[in-house]
Image (cartoon, rainbow, N blue to C red; front, side):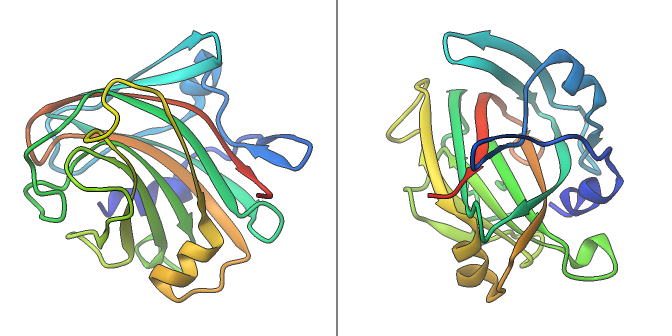
Length: 216
């Protein structure tokens, strides 16, 4: 959805925490949540509700989208030559089975993480890899967004295999930009999280935890 390209040029620039060679993007605290700007998708009736919590593995973000669509974005600079791999731990409690995710009517995901590269003078010129937790497609499936070919949906997890279970996934963002956009990207410009159900008018519940970039 086009809104995601606007988020990352208008939000606050926040501190990125790093440990050794890893670059942690989100802390998932109440303070951070209050600082992130929430942007609703145009035409959506409701905002996705985001709250923070914690478990034995640390803080997490809970997203409840009930016929809703809004995202949380963060403008960051990630050196993809040093840390090309995105790592995501996530879980889907309630999925969106039965929709056709590569169509405008069904283009909803219970959980997605956008990796965004600025490639022009305007936000709409940006390119994105949309890493998704699909409710209907197999891991490895990918397709351009039905709203813009500049954003590619790439399935890293599926509720066909893992429903209501924490899953940790990894992807080489630098290689994916070359594969899907034919771009040699050295630096990433932003990251965004979203759970959306405005097209299907369904309800999804998702959790995000420990999103960071690593050397390998």
